[in-house]
Length: 240
Image (cartoon, rainbow, N blue to C red; front, top):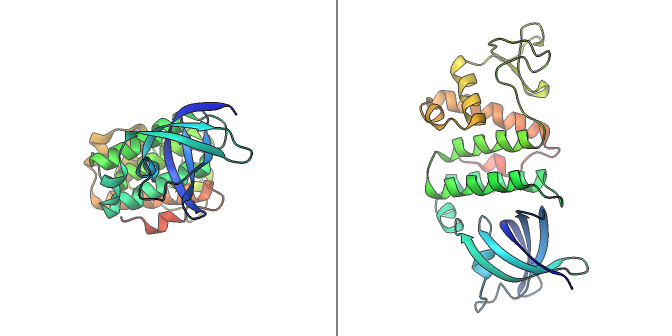
């Protein structure tokens, strides 16, 4: 049977039988892969700890009839322990891997892979607040999937300008002519923060007030839930 290697980040795992586990991974070259790791739940397993959620590994697999089989796993990024030790980081990481699971399929998605690995690395190193890291990841992941929001020009008619009305169903900020009655308005600081999270301007994002962050988080959550068919179950558990 064909054997192949790839880098992978573990999204989730499920028990199989008495000692095996089904591992769902987002790989660098092969997109999303579901594979069986045999015997990893035994205490003598050589690579069970390398195939836990949030871990990044170099894996070797061979193609099976229904599921591929993992034969080797070498750790590339041991982020699981640091993330699970901090509840806000753990809940943010859970929402991130669930998003990646929903947005990716069997076809390759190198950008999504690199974005997720970078986000998990940032969480493990405490580079930014978990909530900011999650919100930035969600906006970027949705943009890569074809749902890029607009936080400057009108998302509906494209009119240039600075607007405060936001309609997530229309794709972001809208001008006064396009805004339906009762459309919520955001402060200029919140609009600026959303733009900073989307572009990766961490200096500006880190300087935002707690109130501004809270308002931006609500918009990001609504935008995410709107575009993902069944929403994110883990998002309601995220520690804000």
